Image (cartoon, rainbow, N blue to C red; front, side, top):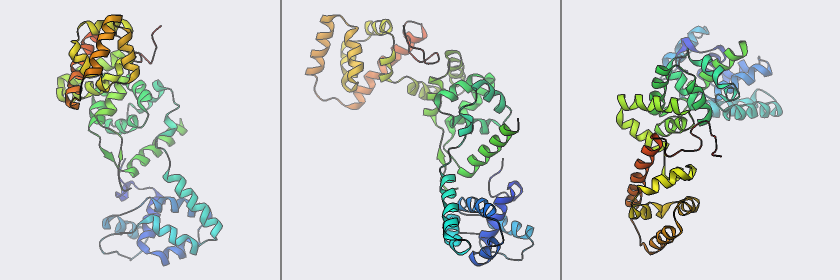
Length: 338
């Protein structure tokens, strides 16, 4: 799936939109007057999403349209401003307002919205033949829970490649995202500017948080073997201190047996009241009173010291979880403890 500046991969409406931008307002107005309202709507949406087009692309398209018009340095025209200024001169104000409303509606279109209601197993089977980078883009837009479910149905080796690609995603051009979205939507029907932040280590961590344990453990093992630093970053984000609120009480009691009182006092300094209450109820009455007294007497502390204490406790918590002595709600499809 090519980028918008590759003339060989552009569809008809996009080619026409670029050609009109290259011709300028006066020539474009003459052409648009000969078109139907629906044709103008389609072209307007395409033009509004164009900011800059390479000279090579515009030249090739103008040749294709049998025009001798050439532009020095390419088409450096803001398509959105161009069409908003042009439309009132080629159609009635009511019709122009309707077209502009459609432009605004298209700009707010949520990528891959049509995929969110598809069964995860069916969706995984549908996209597994796509290029891994394309799959990474798709999965990053599904929401953490749906993404984790789809990931679990993909072949294991492909899972490893996908999460690695998601972790390294930073920004993807909106036109590329919409191209992928449009092609997928058409395939399912038959059976600009700044990029959007859709990936990163935190996305991988959230996806794995919503995956089943087998999938999560398998992927983390792969990351351990291929990129241990990335694996540790993902683990830290997967299991933050506040997540202990969702641990079973028996697991919390096992954890408290192995945590020093000074460490616990420091770690709870920034904890929520709910997490503090959970800790207190899993201590004996005397131990709970002593901990609360220690916390009330503790003076200011560096944030780095608090986070260090929390990380030390989480290291123990991860080990206990691996040993099956501490369970986290939601790790197996969001189930609660009963």
